[in-house]
Length: 555
Picture (cartoon, rainbow, N blue to C red):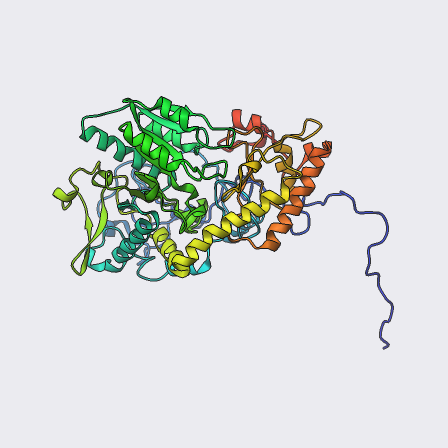
């Protein structure tokens, strides 16, 4: 037998493959995936319930082959061994058994795992690349934090355990609280709020309680145009009437307009600093002084604290209350990696009205101060924000981040975040309009607009084309003070190489938009799904699964 020495082709030949498609709908490793309701057999399930025969006494009797009862056994005892027979209609489900098909897919474990794994491959994540969402701070979540959060004694405790069994957890909460108070220059902190907007509500409830305690209930909260969108929503939810304060041409609060509106009906101002234009408010001390002189209080949205941590203490600016998004400044996971956490720091004026519970060190013990133990030293609290103490898993991650950086490292966090944002701003301002580019350096995020796009192209078209470049789009159409706004926040965790690659992609798409390239209106063309009709999806959302012929997709 001789060796076959005939060669075989190793390079592509013949016609171009083009967009011929595949029988499966898959494109190599990009797998097409149906809805989970469209997979498997809805008449079967991965769990078998034993069928109970009438007159078996409600025991674990099963139907045998051909519908015959199996012989009695230790696992299937005779009816007599289970007490009196059930009344008509009774069974192990207490009469709650289904009377029609459930309509859910019955999947095996491999089918289920593959379904969600395939979906995850079609999603974007911070572990895949730079995530430029402005005002969101999509920074890397260090794995050290995750390891610490999973340590026994942190991951497996319960809020109702006796206090003497969770002294380590209380000590951690107390230490984190000390860091937050020190970094902000405030008097005290409430750790229980579970997110930024929840923290905003906490701060406003404390403001309301303080004003009512002095017999001075007021009804108006002033919110600058450059504030976060949740601020007016929270104020309205808290029962206040919201009035806007305009911004100057340089993107800051109009101090004169604010002073002109202050009066005896104004409970306070909710201000975001740095604001959502990515700019620091240089008049913050004057704003606080004016509000205090008018009898009001100052709430600061601390979502952008990551831009000034270690550099500026909000307490020195006259702030009375401020929430801190642990996911934005101290790298705890966003959204699906949550839950969130939004501790609120208070000035001395508001501290007596802060919510319960909180951890206090008494001698060598850490004590959870609640309604029964608050006593005179915290008797003016407005009550609770949550049932328990806050999000322990997020506290553990945040303190791990703080201790691994130290005070000097946290200062560098802010400096690098500002450096990266300014590098991005100045690298793109020749192809993207930067409405406040002449106002000086930005802080943690760079703001652009769609001014200069040709051929009717919009911010949405650029954002969809960015998906084809392999990036999640930036925040679009916010803040509202800029037409066609594009808010980009690179965070401090991105390297110069990562920034340069993103800048190159964004420059390419921006140049096409300025040239009026109409192919942008079809983007994305390489994503698992093409562009949706977003108006139809918003106005006529399909929120429950229906058979395909019954539901018209928005695609």
